[in-house]
Image (cartoon, rainbow, N blue to C red; front, side, top):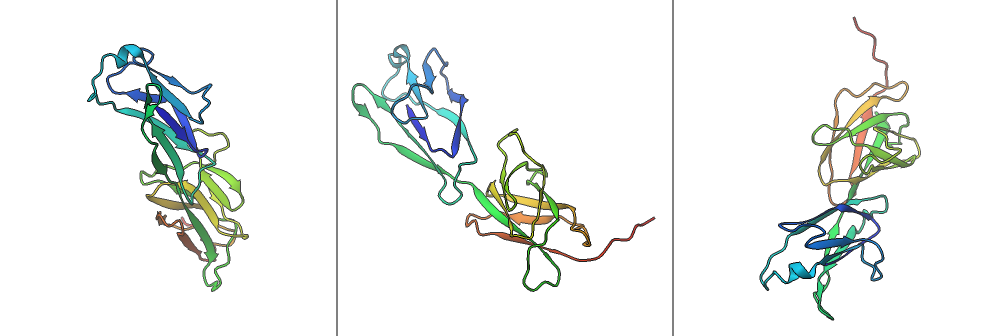
Length: 217
């Protein structure tokens, strides 16, 4: 079994499992020394192949992570095929895994032009209210961190040079929680709902009112 992944996918070699089979007894997973452009290959042992019939089903599972090279526009391809004997085999079977993005526009209430307002800090939370870790790519772009990726942050801060673009999110519901308001503006009391769509054109507009909250007793 041959598998070929594009650069935007990071293969997890330890994730390969085949129902009912034992690794290194019935098959091996090869990730190095491949000359056919494959990311990995599963090679079945002769002993196992001698035990099957033409109708023996196999369920192979494995995983990969979308990384910083993943394309929002076209997604990442993963191709797989089978070969056997000297020259027999199937055609490539293709899947496409996509990531999504949205933008955040913070602006001052009453600004008809909706110019980006700097200095607002937000946390992005998923549908389970977990904080989504982010990697800062630039002042106006962040992406979802891969696991415990080094350099991950738990918030982002708006700038006046443009909208904040968040890449690598799922097609799911999120919330934005403002943790720090720009100087001279009030902190938002309620989270802002974000419903990511497949068009990747969502701009979440967040209006901020000027003023200072008085201390209470």
